[in-house]
Image 1 (cartoon, one colour):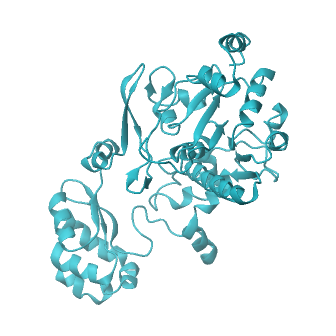
Image 2 (cartoon, one colour; image 1 turned 180 degrees about the horizontal axis):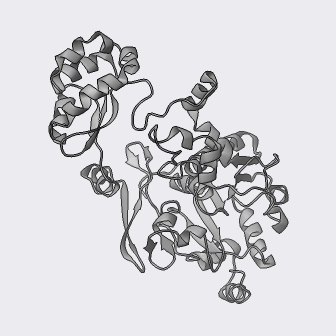
Image 3 (cartoon, one colour; image 1 turned 135 degrees about the vertical axis):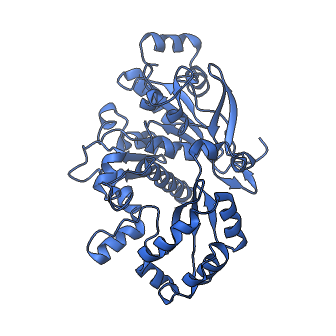
Length: 399
């Protein structure tokens, strides 16, 4: 491998399932950590059965959050499976898990139990709610949290019912926040030698990503208005229809509006109107302004408008379908897709990590693993088990 990866030499045990925990472990894997994903021998991660099938044991959903990992099966309900995890912990730096509160403690795999084996272990627990609060036992689901944290109330058009985000944003942000916390703990451990128990909750992260809308609601003492694809304080800013398709136009300041009105849609009267001279004025009179602008934009083809806007120095872009975006020249040039050959499905693709170090994108070192595909290799490498011992574990249903 041509580049030295930042977390090369770090070992991670991923005992999590679905999205938030696996996302955290994948980020660490992207940065170069060796990630061993522990899965149930027969069913594996729940997401192996979600969405479009890839081969026999993977799906598009599973593959989106499990690159740069190896899969080892271990039945944690068996003493042998628990022993495998404990032995792997002795050789690991980080453990990520999202069992229900107290679930792993019952199996002898809780933080207090494992830090005896490995005092410098960084143990990241991801739950739905505060582990020390009254709802500690509640399971956490992204959609439920989006509702409870108020996120659905700020999404969508004003006339719509509350609307969820298109992706599981709370799960994904929780995974990213968790990875940040693990990186901070790894950095601290270099100085102190101390391990840490990191506790992350989906609800906490859902509240955190309300960001400026959350603070505005507190300041106003009520929910802020919903503007759909528009901006709460900048006009015109949003998605508009051209003669042949939607486009994004973001008029960010007064000079840009002047050029937009005079040079793009050729409506100098709008530039001269005192109501629209400032952004505060344009926001106050947004309905009148949009009613004047939208018919003008619908007169012109999208590509013509995009060129006109670009010439005027106004940020803009076309609104593409997801397939169109992922197969676009921009995505290809950026090397944002990793192509590989799947042993069953043949040619396959997975999203590449978004990170660049010293001008080079971090690689997909290994594609998402088939269920248990690395069990024998890891047990031989890390636990020094021979073929007979591994076969006995398989017969016992432990792996």
